[in-house]
Length: 245
View 1: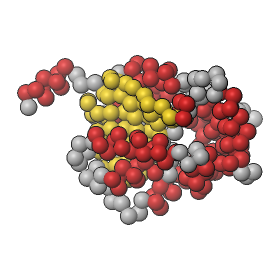
View 2 (view 1 turned 60 degrees about the horizontal axis):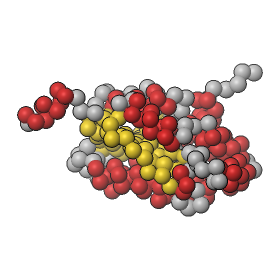
View 3 (view 1 turned 90 degrees about the vertical axis):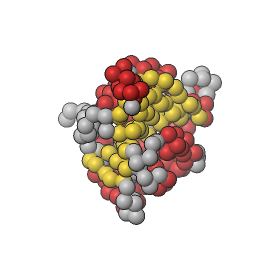
């Protein structure tokens, strides 16, 4: 039997763990995930212009999109994911919000026109995609000139002193803490996807390669979680229009 592709493997993982995903993330991050995500939410909601549109790629169970929609009722928030089970959980959680909608789709071929959103974000999802550059290119494409692209994700720490403890926790403890006996293999995959992911400075370089300006990063917990962000460039022609207006 052929080895499943990365996309197929990730799909099966998230289909299996959707119902317990939020609680497990809180456990395996030792309660810190909420603060890390809040930094992303604050960055988007404080910068977004009134009545703008925001896209959450690989939105999972929708916690980022829902928080943005709740904090800024004037914004139209769209969450996209390829897992129906994760989206079903997101829909249940957002029943009282009328400014958030959910799409089933592929992060590498976003079903939206160019220059649609004021900002786009991806949270703990980029490392699970098959082509990091393609996803960032698509996010940049659908963001308006001057808009921002954000990525919050897990990374192997750079420090050789921290890495052995990191590996011990994420390989030996985290799979049981997150998934127990039943879903240990799914959470072991999440460790593997982090181990095979880019290093934080490589991702910063990729932000610049896809044409994002003012690219920078902010790290937490010895660099095991990092927020990257960059601004879509405004063409010379658009700059002239803005000055004229």
